[in-house]
Image (cartoon, chains in turn blue, brown):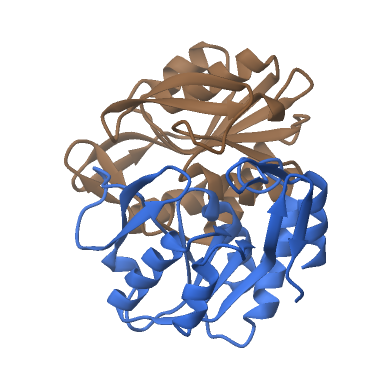
Length: 191
Length: 191
């Protein structure tokens, strides 16, 4: 998605440790016009799929999922990262290791909101080692829903998450895949 | 907002401990059509304000803020609940006590995204004892931005957050205010 790649080149900042900061437009401050274009692009790429729910994970995926959901006309459900006192009833549960925060946490989703009748699109802002997405995939499989695919805004193609998920046979659409990243250059994979 | 009140009566569930679960449409599963109407209503109520940024707090406020921001044509910024390895540079910081999780956490926002030139609308899903909103208000004051007001989806009018914030002179618009809540009845404050 050229608009997104141009924006990453303009406003993305590379930090030591293979960190790409896109916090001025994607995951701390959010440019809603850009995210609308991202939502339309996800719809275009998954227009052949009978999506009934969009599933994401808190926190930065939620806004993108909600904007995208307007084009699919389906509800968003978001998995939560820890047990909340307000969550009761039966839960789907998986464990995720966070690359950013260097810890393991539980990801939970109420069983009320996902079942075998659903066709699910996963949406998240980043894909690196794939742990968050693998946690969501595990939840979808446990629910018996059909996993139609995953839409990612930025994939770090030099980490192995994308390969792992494609090798599982999951349809993965990343709007910008970064194949290499240094302090002064970014190389995107060709579409 | 009648549409919202009707939905709370239809799908909200009261739990012991003054807990109102609206997780089937607002903060676990999200009904995007309803949230769009909520976004329009916030725009109608704050149409006289020269808003430049919408500020919310992760996680469940983010989707509502993003949908609402489409009507204001401004970016969303969301405060984060803990230090992240990807956040650097100078931060606004306040402390918030969570009613739901019974703990105190730091709320942080990069100084890059809010300054004296901004006119801020706060948006969140719930207002009970007001701690989260007070944390955001502290951040806005520290930034020197103009606080235009706060838009809340559901206010628990029988807790003191709303009174505290109105007493501070902050313009607070809650789309549904619940004045009393028992296992089998909910009473809304008159508009």
